[in-house]
Image (cartoon, rainbow, N blue to C red; front, side, top):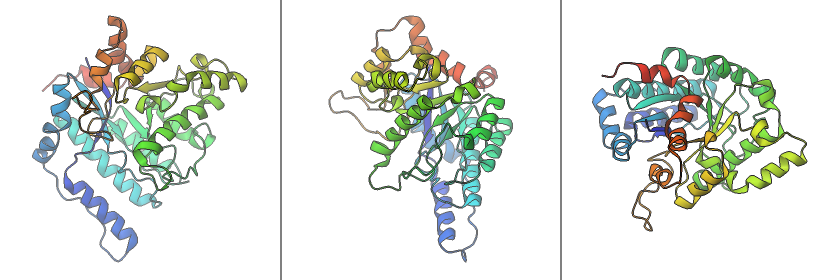
Length: 340
């Protein structure tokens, strides 16, 4: 199987965005009526995918995509918890409907209703709902709900422990994924996302989180940010800080995806990182759309970059399938279910 571990519903029917705009308008003017999500028909959902993510997944040789709400639209910087809960539930329920319509091609990962400095109780409740009731296989965790101002505790802080305990109990990983940037110094897609990937990894290096939660798993997207390119720096810093080697201290619990949009970047990722820690991903129809004029292929057609690597059959199968099944073990139930 070819499993893409990183996809977002960037083509959701317009009613979802209209619901969000109504939510935000009511926060600005409480006299407005409470926002309600207009009915979305199954045909709308089918059309939104059959002409977009599903079409490209099939065309590029993929089988299944782990699918979550649009990352930039999570907007965790909005500080009102009830609004965050309603927005996460609406977004996750729509993902659940996608999976119900196309169970052989999509598996759900949920948005959490985080707010800056807020309690994680709502996030834990939504994670449990999505996994236990909706059959989701993972979640997206934002290490910076402030939107580029970094007011949250490091991911190794005990603030996060109740959520980690639920993740371990449910046996689901989290993809480390920030949302929109409210800081003009950091372009959301070109700086904020990659900053967060790199920052999260360094937090794991500095801390001792996986001694406390030895089965906790994180996927750091976008090729691990700057980490593979500066792998010697991180190995050296771990040694300087008196930490164990990275393959023992961090890399049994942390994985990188292949959302790197050129061949040289994938070549480096494949040479530097152990293939046990690399999962195929494209984030197709996400941050980097369109065609690379130098190659004539879409930037986010990442499978073709991996195909070009000099891998053994075993190594190729790890990147394309086996690592995803190991990191997201709840995929097994969905893959074993009878097809339509």
